[in-house]
Length: 117
Image 1: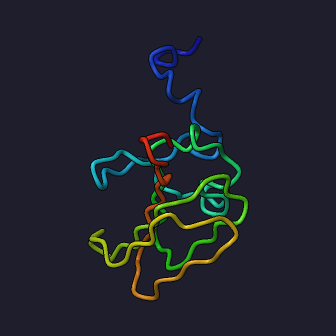
Image 2: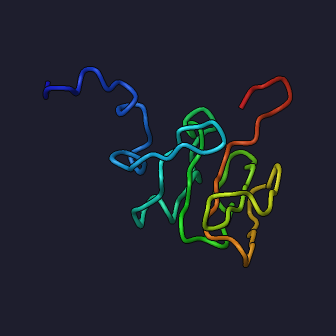
Image 3: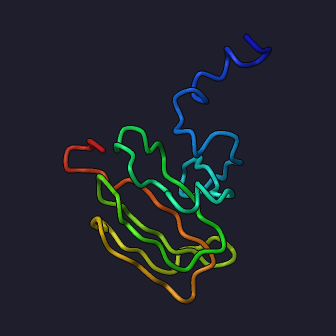
């Protein structure tokens, strides 16, 4: 095993599209920053809620789609200082959401009643 790899158990559990991405601290969460074409295109789509982790920050983004989502999303549109400017709670699958003033979007798994995500 490569040095340092054994201690990074979470890297093996992360979806492939999030591996190696930088992380940002937002809303009390450490989330991957979608900086690759694959991570930007797919976001949290096609994942089970249990594999979505804390969420995903998509920089330089004003709209997102929920096609291929297996669970609802909590979408927080952010300005260039990463302050919230618009929130869409429990965004269902197969929709497009836009916020023309946004500079980034924070995608969070919407928690089901009882705290199960």
